[in-house]
Picture (cartoon, one colour):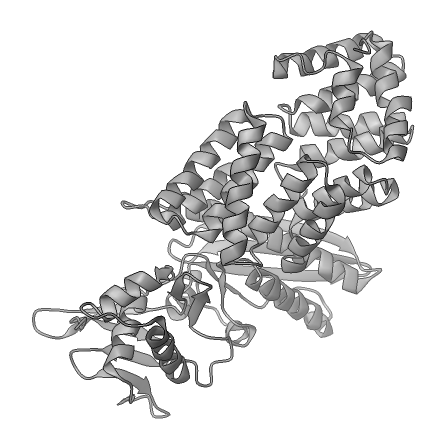
Amino acid sequence: MLATADIFLFEEFRLDRRDGGLFRRNQHGAFVPVAIGARALDLLEVLIQQIGVLVSKDEIMAAVWPHATVENANLTIQISALRRVLDQGRPEGSCIQTVAARGYRFVSPVTRVERARSGRAVVPEPVAPRLSIVVLPFANLGADLEQQYLADAIADDVTTDLSRIAGMFVISRNTAFTYRNKSVGAKQIGRELGVRYVLEGSVRRSGSQVRVNAQLVDAETDAHLWAERFDRNTADLFALQDDITSRIAVALDLALVDAEAVRPTEHPDARDYIFRGYAVASKPPTRENYAEAIRLFECALAFDPRSVEAQGSLAVVLTGRVLDEMTDNAAADVARAERLVGQALVASPRNLAAHYAKGNILRHTGRCETAIPEYETVIELDRNEPGAYANLGWCKLLTGSIEEAIPALKRALRLSPRDTRAGNWSARIGLVHLLQSRTDEAILWLEKGRSASPALSYVYVWLASACALKGATERAVLELAEARRLTGKGSYASIARLRADWVHAAPNIRKLLEATLYAGLRKLGLPEE
């Protein structure tokens, strides 16, 4: 029997094994007993003691049926019994999350109450899930009170977009909007709703201009973690609303991951290492950053070898360093990424990171036509994933649809203009301009790319070619020399070596490469072989 002396409070329920089991608050505010079996109570206690943590089926079976051999169907029956009780009248889905083929996670905020020696309960602070947030109604600061609809719509859309992020616990709009026009601090809201973060904001419309301010607040410390201002023209209000909410969601995702990664913890688990891996992976691409991100995701897998999130994320960074030419063994990295993707997709067919990594693998191996549906699946799962748009645009280029490349790449930059991958995306736009003989525009975009991502050697090669075509030979020579210094492997020793990197490109793209990129490098004396 698992019963402890502690009391657990969540939503309208009270779990108190010493004094009778599970209770629900009635319309008068009193807790009344709920009829439910002892096995279901044991199962609830196992899950509730590890709020927000994936508990494997094996761990549950060992705790609930410690000295018996039972079938998995028994666990399914008990989960169903719990959900019938706990989810009754609940508008936001089940408080018990199923992770396919792996286990279950309790996602509702919980307050744990410890009994003092006197037997009286001592109530501590609520235990909030890690990525838990409430989006408060945005304030309308304009003179026209009727414009409140726009502020409400932005808050609604941000709530929806954040809900799509894997592992995110987001308070519903109906609950969040009960705080409208109330002078309540972030700490109090965090305690009342059991969340770690509060997003607040304002909207001001003046004539044809709209300004949106958003701030992310740590509900435990009341510290401001992130703030951003968005200024837009109101010519197309729907497009304006879509653009602003998407950018807020992308920026918030990064800010929340960074905040979780730096939270102190004495005993890190798989989730802690995953957050730390995300934080390092979001830094500018360098060999050192890739190596550290890989190490952290490997630590996560050491804690939980079946973690689909860690498998997919590790595959993404392995393929990333291959594509960025920052690996010493591309074949080994790709082979390992393929195994990880296979494992992740078997366990979770709609895992975003696994589809993203699979697209990277297909692109690296010259199968861009097949990679395109993978990136489109990522966008279907998360319409705000900028990297998917950027890679989709690159694949469009490689498959010959050059006119579709720049819009997709610019969409990525629009979603995440301060992204550490923005240098790569800007450089790709520059190359497309170069292929289309818009050399001046190419140089501007390539310079942006080089400044944002100075460790990417190929950007210097593309810029060297563009400068040579413009007659700036001295500068072009310096750019090519820097590319060679960064690689140190003679990667840019001949046209033939470069041509090999584009062997899978469509015929029209290979023809444009000959007339532009290779033509500029020939002016610098790069030999054919």
